[in-house]
Every structure is written in structure tokens, then in C-alpha cells.
View (cartoon, rainbow, N blue to C red):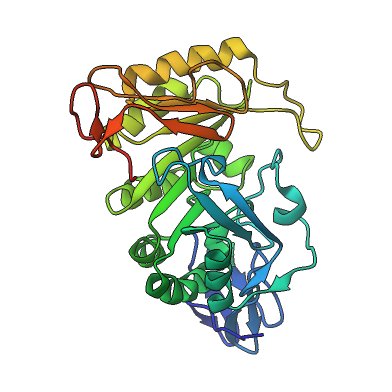
Amino acid sequence: MKKRKAEYWKVESGNTLKCNLCPHHCVISPGEEGMCWARKNEDGTLYAANYGKTTSLAVDPIEKKPLFHFRPGSSILSVAPNGCNMRCPFCQNYTISARKVPTRYIEPEELVELAKHYNSPSIAFTYSEPIIWFEYIMDVARYAEARGIDLIMVSNGLISPEPLNDLVRVVSAMNIDLKSMNEEYYRKVLKGDLSTTLRTIEQASKKIHVEVTNLLIPGDNDEDIEELSKWLSSVDKTIPLHISRYFPYLGYERPQTPMSMLQESFEIAKHYLYYVFIGNASITGAENTYCPECGNLLIERTGFSMRIVGIEKESCKSCGRKVDIVL
Ligand code: SF4
């Protein structure tokens, strides 16, 4: 197992260190870990304690990430570290994000070969929070590029600008969770930072393909959808927004998202953005991609299966507009 020094930290005083990978800026004493468990101070040096340690390994349809406009219809090898740098009380993956669990070590080169073995053109760092796997992703990238494998992150966007710059040089696409537009909710309930996530979406979307997911929780963030969509359209109207239905989990006391609320939010968001989808609910047509110019159906989706029906030579078959999709 490789022992890898962490990047983005400095000495605070004596052997006490400060991690600068994300805006928590954990101050870590010798023998201790940061709040994400991923970075450990060993005698005055910060190590990537979770380097290559994998909790999960699966081949998924890329639509499951969700990524609808990046290599639609392809499969993706999905892996996850143990831990997270946020504490969402409704996390659907809390068994690997908020509990310490056994892991299996996978060398960067081995991971890329596994993707080849399973005929997956991409690898997704997903399920828990891949930002805390920063060094591992950067090392996997060296082999992935040589073997023609794309790297994808499904992330909360809570990362400092400098390491994000490094990541967008090697990662091809991201799905970033935007959980609310309320700074206080982000800070107090989720232990995150709204302004950082907004900055990550802006910074990343200038360099790579980005899609955004909003888990719609009644009573928490259902009044944010207009502000959220308006803000996202000011960054780029072509960024796909996935509005995802919430189901009660972990005893979090909110009811499941009513279908009427999903439908209403869908209509509001479509007013600002070209591509809006509803996930975790069966609403006819709400997962399809239509041409924003002429309304032609470009990609039809049901569950995780899809059919490209209205695209020819990377353009809309009907009006010829170039599609905003990495095919
Ligand atoms: S990456 Fe982890 S250790 Fe570093 S500042 Fe963020 S939560 Fe703390």
C-alpha cells in the first residue's frame, strides 16, 4: 500500500498542521485526522490517510451519476472513498460517508486497468465525497490519460480554488450538488459553505463539462429553486440542472417531496435554463433532452435507459443547432 504525502497544507505551529484542501482549514495535531478522516498528521507531516482505500466498486450507467450530457449511454466504473467533508443529516450514502468502514486498496494503475477490463470509457469518483481523495485522483489521472479513460467527479463542490484548478486539468466532467441558496442552512445544517460551492460551479464550468443536482427537500430548500435557477443561468444557461426527489432517510424529519412541488419547480427552472430534469420520480418526459431552439426531442430517457433520437453529426436533426452534449 502506497503511503502518500498530502498536498495543500502548512505548518500552523510546531508539529501542528493546517489543511488547506477545503474551506474547513482543519488544524490537525500530531496523531490526529481532519474532520473528513482523509488527512492525518504523522509527526508533523500531513498524509493522505485514505489514499486508494475504496469502499465501493461498481459499473453504472453514466445516467445514474447523474450525467445526461456527457457520453450518454456509456457505462462508468464507479469508486468511492470512506468519509466526507460535509455532514448532511439526510445523506443517502451515510454508511460510507459518515461511518468508518472496511476498505480495499486499489493502486491507481490497477483502477485504470479495471475500467478497461469492464469496457468503461470513464471512471467516476462518486457516492461519498471525492474531493477528500484529491491525491489519489491526481495519481489515477496519470495512467488514465495514457489509456484514454475519462475521469468524472460527483461532488459537493467544497474545495479551495487552487486544488480545484489542479483537478479540472485532469477531470473531464463533474456533477456538483447545489443543495440550497441559503448560506446559514449550508453552514449550520450541512457543515458546508454555499459561496465555495457556487464558486466551484463557476470555476469548473469554465474548463470542463458540469451538471448540477438539487435535492428538493420540502421545508428546507423548496423556496430556493427560482434563485438557484436564475443564478445558474447567469453562469451558463446550458448547464443541466437535475432536480431530485427527496425521500425521508436517517430519521430526518421532512416528508417526501410531493409530485406537485417537483412539477412546479421543474416549470420555474425551465424558465431560466435550457435543460432541466427530474430524478427519483417517474414524470413522463421530465428526463428527456429537447433542443432549446426548436423543441425537437434529442435524447429520450426512461429510468437509466436512453435512446438518441434527434441528433445527427452532433447537431439537432430538425434545426441544425449544435447540441450542448459531449457525445
Ligand atoms: S480536506 Fe478534510 S482535513 Fe482538509 S480542511 Fe477539509 S475537512 Fe479538513
